[in-house]
Amino acid sequence: MSSAADSAPKKRFRILRPLDRYVAAEFLRIFVVTSIGFPVLVFVIDLVDNLRKYTERNVPPLDILLSYWYFLPDTMYKVLPASVLFATVFSVGNFTRHAEITAAKASGMSFHRVVAPIFVLSVFAAGLGVVIGELSPPANAIRNELLLETCRGGAAPSSGGPVCNESNTTRYNFVFGAEEGRVIRATFLNVPEATMQSIETEQRGDSVTPSRLLSASHGSWTPERGWVLKYGTLHVLPTPEQDLVIHFDSMMDRAMVETPTELRASDKVPEEMTFSQLTDFIGTLERAGADVRGLRVERMLKISIPVTCILIAMFGAPLATSTNRGGTAFGVAVSLATTVTILVLIQLTKAVGKSGLVSPELAAWFPNILVGAVAVVLLARVRT
Image (cartoon, rainbow, N blue to C red; front, side, top):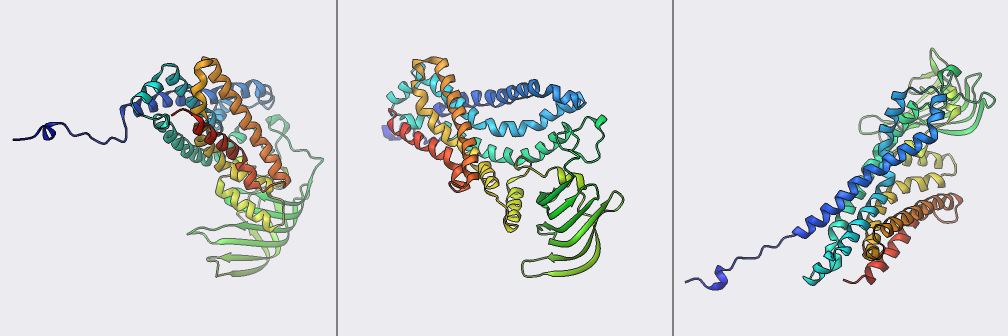
């Protein structure tokens, strides 16, 4: 004869409860809308500000439209923390106004347990930010080419592209970040004569291609042959312990495809380099004795900005419990004020890190440290 305890249904331990699905769905609904809406707003503002410039360059309308497709990864990467903040504030605010959090507390669930799905989803948003951050640099480079933002050598004024300032035809002691992680250093570049002096090129290898370090006394460029380097040494490094040295009087470097005007105009900016490419570039500049503090801040921001998604959710969730006093207007005001404050702090960290007042890495993480400290205080003071 079975007992009543045996006949009673056994309780199943569930990690994901119906309330968790409800909270996650509400958060995701707002997160997706803001993640799409913010980039569209940025596109409209950018088009209004720069349409005249694009038309003066005779950029085809299709290229302008396509440029915003390539602008999407960079825009989404930058607005992800704001999207997480808006989704957190409005979802938790709605739960508070409709007394759903009060009902959850009455059933024995703490505030922290109720908003736990939001924190989990913010971690996924941070991971998404890291992935998008690595996809945006090549897309930014393509966008700049479509919009003729890059100064191009030999471009005729009728092409509409920006024409290099011909009055500045030389460049001294520079480092140029080239394609495929190559770095070019030279003490002097003369664009009209198409010559360089004291040239060094470096390219890190991988499991298939060995590293290569080349130095030459001088070199000259022609459209037919490219760069011909004179009196130098080529080091081929299959492994860190092996070094194959080749001395030459004259060598044509096929990998060095940049024209003199392109070398004079500009090199890749941090927005056009992935984390690994920027790390290699910084290492080369450090070996050359250049100041890389600003670049170190930019490199660390590629990690700290996605992590902001997690901290901003921890900050916004307890703060949103007071939005029932001001409704939607209060939620919008809090979200916008916080977003603007973080953007201002990021710009300040770039200046502080570049100046050397604190280490570049600490400067890049300062906004997160500040937001995280406030978030801990708010989470500790919220009624659970």
